[in-house]
Length: 246
Length: 289
Image 1 (tube, rainbow over the protein chains, first blue to last red):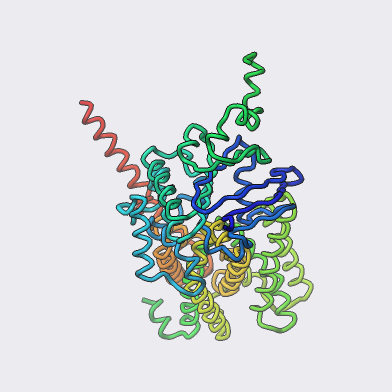
Image 2: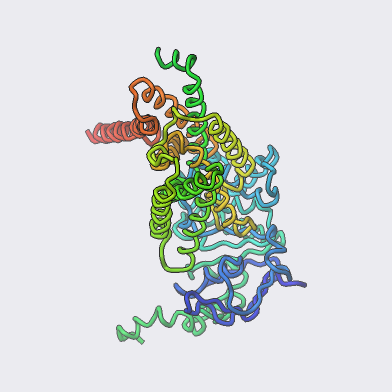
């Protein structure tokens, strides 16, 4: 079986500073993978490298056994919420409708059936009643659900989400987690950058612990062991030593 | 009314009105994308950067359209090149490149001693529009409107979420330069009407007004075009009736419409915001008593 995502010895640097060193890992279809690690560990950089938004210095990345260019239609990416201009004059349904653009191609406009499909996707995240609201009028969690609906409208096989649970309410978080698990059960693959360790074992099938290099990968229970976590979070915890706690 | 009589009587006034309305519409349409992409300064830059092109075109004896588009697009590329290949930020890069192009234009016009009147290029003179200029404006207007209609989807997604656009394979940078080309063409079309210095107002003000009035891009585009066209008609009326510079009256008409929206817009207007805030306060006070 071909891995959905395979990274071989991937190196990335920003302005001469190394961000990722020799990253190796692969994900099989039908998994929810969580990428965890401290701030500055290169989690978002890893996603950007996957999507060729940043160049890699060395190594190889394969998606469904091929290059990204051959598989663009199979990927849906949900950027961090902070990347958007929430004052943009766009309604919720039109935002979701954008998910149908990649398969429409240039020159074609979304038709009625595309709008209906976008509406169905909104229903899946429980946001259909907000379809004609301007996106800035929603709460953080509602916004995140709308962007997940847009990803659903892309009808992708691989979903990549950057910090989807930051600053959102519990209802939205539960809705999103449930949907991601449904997608997995349909045989899709989900990759999530995440930084709240408390829920990591519940949310993910596989974990990738990152700190500029791969510290550990595997089932959450294997990865979330104190001696392994300490390796990645050493710096974050150094204040304990300074405070004389051992 | 003297203006209506003048319209019937004078051919030059008909031409002026037609070009002004067209300029109002296309500036309004392109302006929406300019302000949503945070490129107001870029609009100002490109409009100034057409000057050397206009000077060279007059000297060589070709239509100024070609030279203007050439130096406009070249400056846009130069701005992108400097900001991408150094730590210089985009707005700084814009400041460097467009003033350079503009300065070069001023010198070229002086040296080449061309018959172009610098004052008319800078501030426009819509009442002196020639038939060929009307055709150029109409042609540019048509190209711009058709382009925006055909590539609406792509312009929307690259303005709202360039990352998604790039991930699904859109040539984001090419679309940026395409928009810069349209922007340059719009500037050229506006030369006669409002001139280089004030064209940025026609790009920004109607679009910003529309932005205060709606939450949908498609509606915003139509509103902006309508506001641009209205400003053109109102401005031209005052220009003709009171013998004032047409570019300036058109721009001030647009500004007046903007402030009306700024005060009275149902959702964004500061007047309603104040009234609602007071209403809320009174309600809270009422509850407390």
